[in-house]
Image 1 (cartoon, one colour):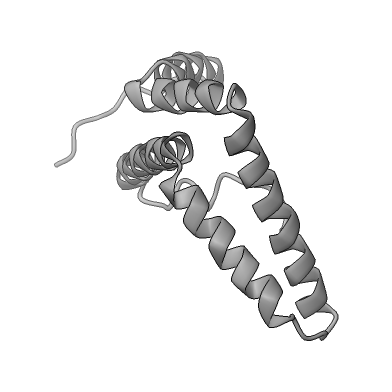
Image 2 (cartoon, one colour):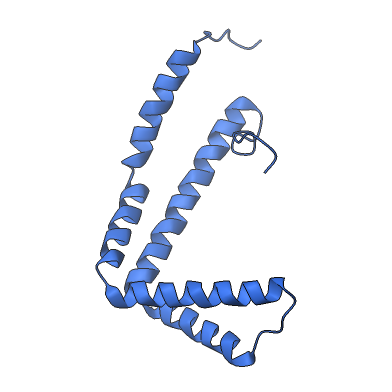
Amino acid sequence: MEPIREVVTRDIVIEVAKEFGEALANCEECRAVEQAEEALKKDLRAKKLISDYQSLQFSIQRAQMWGEGVPKDKMERLRSLEAEMNLNPLIRNLTNAQKKLQETLVALNNEISNILGIDFAANSSSGCC
């Protein structure tokens, strides 16, 4: 027989959610992402690498969406920029920090989902998109 659980009001749940959000915002993983982002903002070379990569990537995606061929040199340039980004310690640090934060968020979602008996994240958004 399951123990009887106390029913709590929506206001209490929201208050606890705020506390949870504050704890999450102050966790090591969130702090590591914030610090990595701050370091990256100060490095013009790293920012330019990301900007160039994103711009070229968008250009290639747009061409593909319109059924246009993508020149080989553009694809090679994209791979070259990606390789350069992977070698940049600030970008690599941010990527690693983001991965660790994502792992934490997945673990949190799993815990909440297990308690609720539903996929919490999948059922948290409204609308169809």
